[in-house]
Image 1: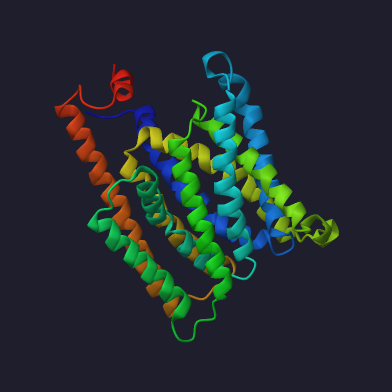
Image 2: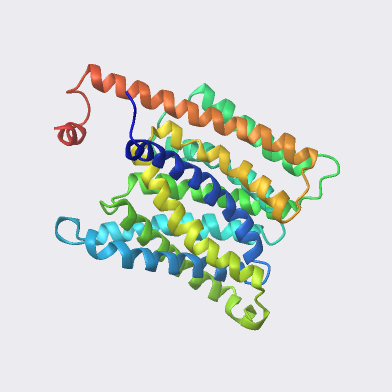
Length: 326
């Protein structure tokens, strides 16, 4: 049967969205590196997310926060908590680290987030950590060690540690976002988290004296372009594409962004900023990406097993799960 042009476009759109996620989220590391050259890191991140969150709330808030979708205080509070962990602890420390760390290296360290998520989720829910996950954690740790420690390495180790700690915060925020009560509409949740996290970042930036360090006339054209890119494409467009992809493609397919993003970042860092592909980047990066692949594939198998169990035992599960299926 021959498919019409409209049908073909419909089938292609989810993959276009996923490729957009690959590229735009991968590009944010280079964008951050350029932006913090002449803008203090937390002030830059706070401005980016507060503006992106405000714009997104203006676009989707009125339509999706009325009636049964009306926001409650627990939802707002949860958004503030998750946004603080993700953006202040996660992205804020990444921006500080990228003052002295190459964007490709930072992206490879951040690629350990899925492993930290598994660990933090296991601690929070008292779930069992499987052997493949333990292997992935060992690989990821070894990969970071290789990035930091091979002979001839010119990496700024304190900055790398800052980014690694930020990755743990990001993982904690991701787990919190799964466990806490949040708004029903995903775009509203994201907008609230970005706005709340952005405001918190600006508060911390003020406490660090970054407003006094900021001089508008000193901001370069490169940093300005990077800021615009981060707000529009790195935040609003990329997340909208992610939400569309997650609704139209299998979860394990979309999850591949976790190990494609750092590869994109390394390539773009080499092209735009001429960051060298040294032996520590190649070897450490390969080990980290392998660990992420183990985590992502393990999740896919686990989700498939759960789906099979639910199909075979449709009345099993908690009362809330049964009610949602009814």
